[in-house]
Image (cartoon, rainbow, N blue to C red; front, side, top):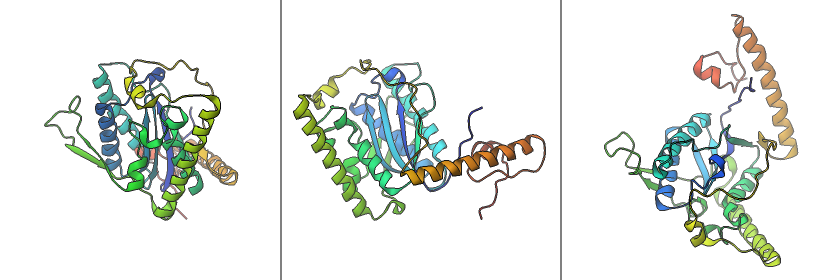
Length: 296
């Protein structure tokens, strides 16, 4: 049996999910960019998720967000299903869109780590030698919108959704810096400095090695049926937390205590005895309405 998930309110996360067989099913084009933004906006608004930065590369996406109400499992399930069906319709496919297995969701434990992951996600196309600068990326990248405060708006994709169906005609996504992360201007300045540093470092590495970027035109010319020739590392560790060593150790110890309390409560519950489950219990709280320990 897999370990129980601990879903807490008021947490920062970064999610990464790849397309099946690493195929370039999300290769940027107008329809794909619009559908990704639309599905993400609809899901985030429905489940009250505060999206900080999304980035969609040809075969995977990173999205960093703040989950104020403990809704992220519902948010990710809805978004990934909605976009997968829409994109399969666009590509004329019927097979699974996402790679098999659970997507990678990492809880970010401190502001420094959140900012570092924002920079990491925003500069992914630069580090992958797809474009020279972050704002050159022709796919979805929330960096410019985040820095300018301009919302991302998308129209209901005509290739999938019914014209007179229940889905909204347009969807708007306001990228945000939650107050829990710090003062907005200061955070954005750190993000800007981090992005510029990565762009500078990668440009210097290209000069040293002679490597060249694919460029916007090359990215758009790729076939979505393509599979990268590189070999992906397998059986790597899947981190549950990211942060300073002290914060990671604290989070791991708290999670271990949660698992012990969960297992003890579950044994009582299965035996028909009164049992209260620890805060953070998700599946049984949602589907079996088990009682949860009151916060101290």
